Amino acid sequence: MKKRIISILLVAVITASSLAGCGKSSSSDAEGGEEGKVINVYSWNDEFRKRVEAVYPKVKETSKDGTVTTLNDGTEIHWIINPNQDGVYQQKLDEALMKQADASADDKVDIFLSETDYVNKYTDADADVAMPLTSLGINPDTDMAEQYEFTKVTASDVNGVQRGSTWQCCPGLLVYRRDIAMDVFGTDDPEAIGQKVKDWDTLKATAEELKAKGYYTFSSYADTFRLYGNSIEASWVSPGETTVKVDQKIMDWVKDSKEWLDAGYLDKSVKGQWNDDWNKAMGSSAKVFAFLFPAWGIDFTLKPNWDGENGVWGVTNPPQEYNWGGSYIHACTGTDNPEHVKDIILALTADKKNLLKLSKDYAEFTNTRSGMQEAAGDASYSSEFLGGQNSFQYFAPVAENIQIAPLSAYDQGCVELIQNSFSDYFQGAVDFDKAKANFETAIIERYPDITAIQWPE
Image (cartoon, rainbow, N blue to C red; front, side, top):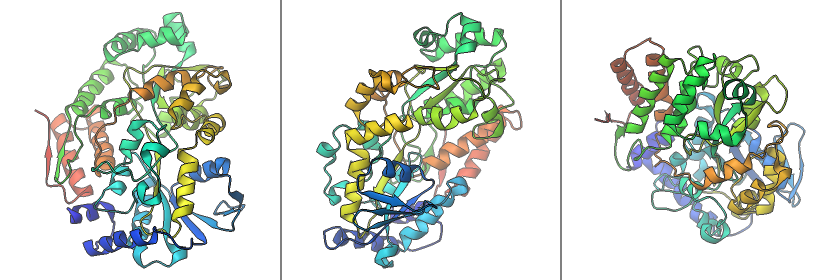
């Protein structure tokens, strides 16, 4: 089991004893003693730094280049940023984690971040690179009682030990064009639109109405993947096993996506997400009615790609509850700054006042249940981009009903490669069986320890 964890965690070929050494160094370091003078934080962008600057009261100043934040006591936070693209961030982080046991105090990793798609890789109990919060003196049951339960589960190992925490909660909504709604349905009222998209069968009938007027329901088959993927009943790879099990819900996404694409409900020219065609589908000249986004997607993806006036986009309920994303903060095993790390995690993820400030300043749906219920009823949280609509009113009930899919350390690769392989099938480049075979080849190349792929009957 240990070797399997190492093969996932590390880029270089190393021995299990190296990782064990990294793990053993942590417990004694966290027991107390003088704190270090440098807090090294690994992340993939400056989002976390900006959140720390916004709400952490002990911040004094940040250097002009954004690489060093100085705290009031003179401690320096050094921000080590590597891009997520092509796995660079994880590679650099993994290399640093393998040197953790022997690193000098000022070079040790103190905090690192992970995303939902690969958080399980770092919270694994055998890997032991993310400290249990209890080892920092944090009691998740009391200190984090306000957090949404599924975020706590996501940040926990298979034994239920929480090894990370997030300031974010990322429930998703259906974000729609009001002008298209008026043209097709004669109303842009979010409650009325919500009824027309309330479940997949209803949405399919609505898609036919949109098509008749020359519009696409969504831009791409990739837009709906998260909703199906959040519904899987078992993890892609069960603990202790080496077989990838493709859930029936994933194959339902394949079947439905092909049907919707062939029916003309999706734009065939948009191949996936995070590309130029997808970005253009959010523009004013596009014929796409809706996108499926969490709060960050509206503010950081849709808004920058929109070239029209404010108020054209609105939000309503999705056809099913889903979560997309989330950045988790981890205390690194071996940190020489356990008190500082504890303080930062609590300030960023367990302080309701701070979380509400992040929601107000960054339009983020944050990880405080009562706070988000308050925001849902507070007009000051309304969005100018959404024409004065308060999106928290719709996000809050979705968040309450999210059931997180069971996670595995292989999730990121499985999620990416299943979409890549069947994208070729959707586009007519390969047949169904070839798409399956391509996924099998790709997943074993990504994870050499995988021995089999099991498809649903």
